[in-house]
Amino acid sequence: MSLKPSQRMEAIAGLCSKGDILFDVGCDHAIISISLLQSNAFGRAVASDVKKGPLEAARLNAEKAGVSERMSFILSDGLKGIDVEKEKEGRKSSTLLISGMGGELIERILNDSPLKRDLFDGFVFSPQSKLEGFRRYLGRTGLCIKEEKTVFDKDKFYFVIRAEKGEDPCKSDMDYELGPRFFDERTDLKKKLLINRLSLYEGLCGNKMIDPESLAEYKRKLYIYREAVERYEMP
Image 1: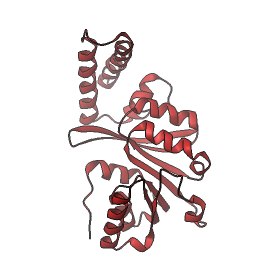
Image 2 (image 1 turned 45 degrees about the vertical axis):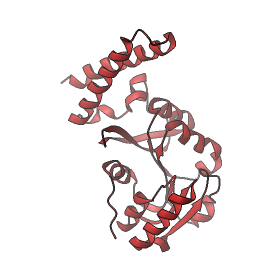
Image 3 (image 1 turned 180 degrees about the vertical axis):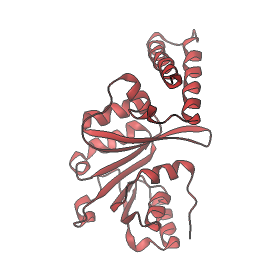
Image 4 (image 1 turned 60 degrees about the vertical axis):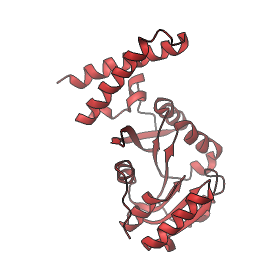
């Protein structure tokens, strides 16, 4: 059986470096984990979810794909119910994947289990909101953003982040807003993102019904995207 991942899922899988074991927290139907096992990028995977329904769907998908014997399925709120050391069982390289939820929720999951968080070698995140705050959180937590991908899937922009333990590479508000590697590669998709966000914040700043606190934040974002567009178009 071959499961068809979305463009966002393919981007996430692409940033999951090969290793011994993948921990897919908030796995939903475990399509990413299963595809990575099928390609032998990982030898084993742990799929966890806070809800029974998605976890059972993940189990059925794994059975159909023929990889269920290489997976553990754990009902857990974040990392709380996962015995990371036991699941690793001496395996050297481990990756934590958390995607499909807001940045603040991913922060909460990591903060709830700091000792378990420190057991992983690599991290892949795809927060669906609060990106700037999440990047700042990673820096404060001692996680270094090594690579990012920008994806447009189902009429929405997504960022996928690969991180490791290390110093914060972000040096400016623009780095935190767009990622420290954003300008390493210039693509039509990234230009589309910048123009889209610039238009958004121009509209918000022109709305006289916006409260002063929100307006100040929107003006800050507008300044970032004006500077980003100028930088992007520089030869």
